[in-house]
Length: 289
Image (cartoon, rainbow, N blue to C red; front, side, top):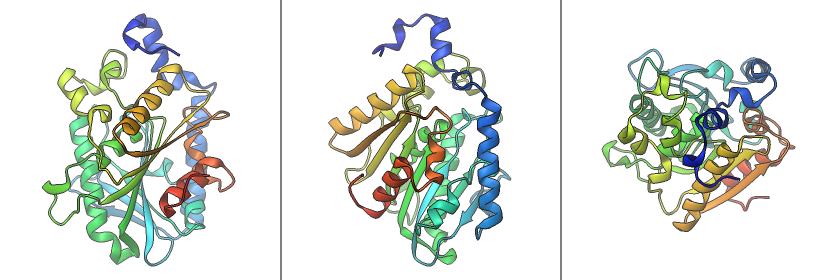
């Protein structure tokens, strides 16, 4: 495992951060997202197209699990330029079966907007959910956030938000997070292909890097990744988790050996998988299995 990405030749840096090329069939991975999500949309109660902001992209599909239930807010991946709600509801049925509601958030994509805008949208989504989810049966005092890949970066940024700028939103609005295969330091990302659509400079990379953020003392975090991911994606998760632990935060690490960058998060759709069980334990306030 390399400790310093700056020692990588450019070709190797590109390979390390090319998530699509890390799996044999990228299209099949995304097709599975769509198939599992379609099942949830067909089989579950769902309230679609809840608007949390002014743009057409700022919408939520909400899958209620009953009155007064905790809510998992899901922020999808796609390297900030792909995917949306229709590929991102795959965990809703399994979570509803355990009494956990799911709010699947859509946001604008790069390069139409920059990362500052996307982060702001996701924060606005959390604030909206806190203020409005009770009318749909959710418990605004038990909100958790989850994200995969780019979505894990967005989820981490939401967790590190200073909510004082959002009237009526408490500082502990998010009780915890499940962060899968995330990008927590954007400086190396700035030096390879994803920056063609992100267009980050050094300052933007730093202010959008959860590695440099401060997290609430009481927050509970689960940081997970697939054993089949590239060394850099693994390093990003381990370094971030280590930083959280050193800062005294409650963090659990979980490497899922038989999963890759894309299918690790779909374990949330299977109550028999360890990631689902660990996420459920986090939400219920129990120790990780």
